[in-house]
Image (cartoon, rainbow over all chains, first blue to last red):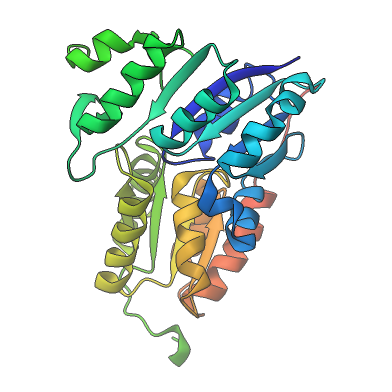
Length: 162
Length: 134
């Protein structure tokens, strides 16, 4: 079935991911790619308990996810790959070199970030990394929930769509 | 009142937090039904980072002395944040999947400590889910 969604969301596994996207896409395999979570049994258990029983969750650091991406993509179940930050997704996309689109689902206010959309705030360096992805042929759009419009990166960076 | 209950009738006993306006709506319904909304603290997490949600919850727990957190979804950001707090806060109880029946049972049950009341209320909330029809 392959990976149906590559999402960046700093809340990691939460309602919008497992219910908002998980149900309409019938997601059965969720891969959380995060170096810190992958290194902590407690963090993995924390997020494992947030996933409904019909969905398998796997945890990987970025290097492992790059190595195992072909396995995820060839899994018979519909899959979703999730990172908590742009840097991790940027490394994953560059390392895999077979990811066609990235969904910006939630990157919230922090020091140094500027508001672009209600749910997207970016630092200049994060903007640069997203532009790099798009320049490499990856479609980057912002869309928090399936019923919302997918906002192209150019519009996101203009901050015109609120 | 049980000495261990440790709270005055109007002191907040729990924090209610969830997606969108869920917490405010639920607590508003408690107020409309029994006038005891002041025993619950409403927390909205819209637009907040996971770190902000956790810190806000910690601040509200410290400010109010509440010993119970009610959240909506097991997968929610608030539940994740609350579980982090429960891990290092003895005597704090989290109930995820809260509904109106749960909160109503909780606010009336002032004769036992809030943490015990939360456990009892969770059972009442589970039992309140019924399916009618074929």
